[in-house]
Image (cartoon, rainbow over all chains, first blue to last red; front, side):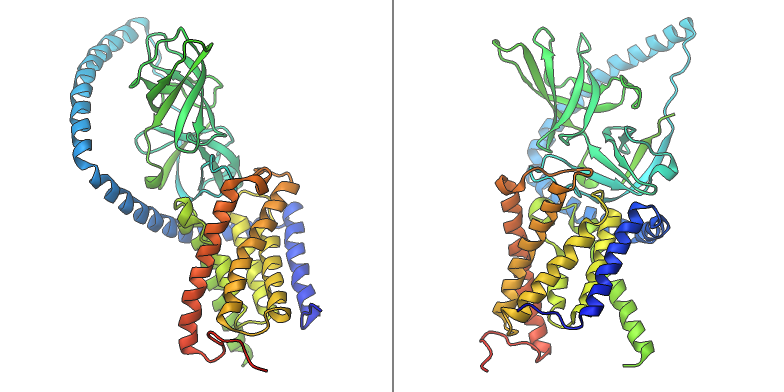
Length: 271
Length: 180
């Protein structure tokens, strides 16, 4: 027969657990939760940074194995980017003159809020398609659901999916549940919605067959929806999936951020 | 034990267990699946069954559950319910079924722990529709793969801990069953 010694004390602890849960749902536990989060942040930050260093170390080891291949591809990329850069300089000069002539107001940038990443992958997703990070800023700091999040290079890494007073959950662009309005920078500036694919890459579907997209085209935010500003880099088209008998085509997009090296991010506050 | 020493012990244990919970959330969880399957809070709690009565491991499991709930985005109470129930079930098994303190008993507990815990966790996520729901987990290959990895981690760590402690303490029976 199952038995517990000292049953009264056991029930006492069951009561405490039930009380904690009840107090949370009526909101009376919030001061304790805030205090706990405040205490946990520096420790969690330290653990997360250590974890990121270890992951980065192993990732670099893998990278060194493919070093020569990477050098070749990077040299090609340098040549390609140099050519693109000279074109862009020309365009920039032209743009500056045109803006001055048309008296264009300078585009306003959304105010950013720096946040530390304190955890990753807390989603209980058995298909492993969703990827999340948790940051140490929440609704108390002005973070709202839907706000865009960028890394130190200005690349969009995802958007705010859920907010608590002192924490926020960010779904990464590689996450199946993370959809972003985007534009492909091709001749026709194809617009659509991006969403994560198997937690590894990004895809854009339901693109008309008439659109001409080639690998290497960059994908930026379209600004539609209003929560994420236009023109932020999402990734680069890596593969175009086009079948003649299909109505639509879809593209795979390579994200341009490294999930393992995300330690500080910038939340673009919605104004 | 004096009252002052007892309070110091409780404070030390609370600090240690809080650090384990934070370590799980911030250090272990971001790793790829094969490593993030390691459930350190559960392994530590199973190991506590060796030395502690329910009046000690229950509050510590509640404390760990609290930290995991505060820092995660599932409904509050998920871990606060799952962890104490899992260790209580394991304790009942230890006191009623595998009554000796041999390595095999603890290996069995280390393997059943993740099984109970994950079933409880995913069932709660399934029946309480708050926030992220994982879907019906029993037919998911990823769930079983993840569970298998977690059981392997748990058993491996138990092997390590048990042998370490066995060299220092005479509380445990290393291999053979106890003769009555």
